[in-house]
Length: 223
Length: 146
Image (cartoon, rainbow over all chains, first blue to last red; front, top):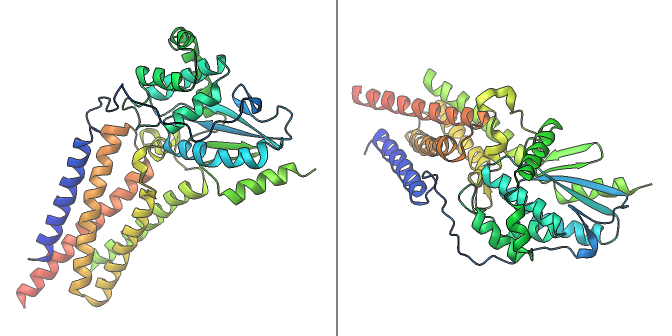
C-alpha cells in the first residue's frame, strides 16, 4: 500500500474512533450523563472543625494567609483539594502557621454556579469544608449532571448538612448573584483560571511544585 | 522540497506552542489568552476541562511529543529523502490531524470555548499533514517517472 493510502487510512481510523468514543460517552449530547441516584464517595480530606472558620481553615491570627480561588467542577482544583491541601493542613495549618481562605471563581458552567451557591448554604450551617471536600471527592465531568440539583442535595446530606435548611437556601437567587459577583471580582483581580493561589504579592494559576509552595510559605513565615 | 521545508518549520512552531501550553500547565505561567483574544480567549476554560488530560498525561505533553516526531521526521526526510522518514511523517501527521479535528470538535460542541493557542497548534499539525501528503504525492510521482 502506498504511503498516501496508509496515512489517509490511519487518519480516518483515528478520527472515526475519536468521534465514536465521544458520541458513546454522551459528550456531544449536552444531556446529563451522571445518574441522580448514587452513593457519594467519602471525602479524601476534611479538616477538624476546630480549624475551620467560615470559608477559611487555620487560625484567624495565623501569620500567613494563602488565598485560593477554585471552581468545584475543575478537575485540577480536585487535585489541589484532595492532594495538596491535606499536606498543607498537616504541615502548616495544624501548627497555627497558615490559614487558607477559599474564594469562588465559578466559570466552567451552570453547575459551577449551583455548586458554589450550595457552598454558601453549607457555610451558613458551618459545614463549608465538609461540603467542599465532599464535592471535590465526587467530581463527575463538567456540566454533565455531576452537580445537578438532586446530586448536590445527596452530596450535601453526605456532608452532614440539614437538608430542610438546604432546600430553602439552594434556590435563593441572591446567593447566586453573590457567586456571580465574587467570580466577577476575581476576574477583575487577575484570576483567569483555577485553581489560582495568592500569597502576599505572589499570585499563580495552577498547582505549583510542592517545594516551591513550601518555600514561599516558609519565606513568608520568616520574621 | 519547499513543501518539506515548510512542514519542518511549521512543526517547529507547533513544538514551541505545545511546550508553552505544557509550561502553563506545570509551571503555572499565566496564559496570554483572555478577552484580548476575543472569541479565542477561552484557554483557561479549555485548560480546566477534563479534556485537557488523558488520565494523568496532559494533552499538551502529547502535543510536544507529537510535534517533535513531525519535526524530526520532516527534517530527516528533507536531508535523506528516506522513504521510512516520509512514512513516519505522513502517518504521524495524519494521526495528529485526526486527533486535532476531534479536539476542535470538543472545543466547539462540548466545552463551548475556544483556546486560541490550542487552535493555532492544531493548525500547525493539520498543515504538517497537508505538507506530508503533498511530499508523498511528489515522491510517488517521482518514483513513477523513473
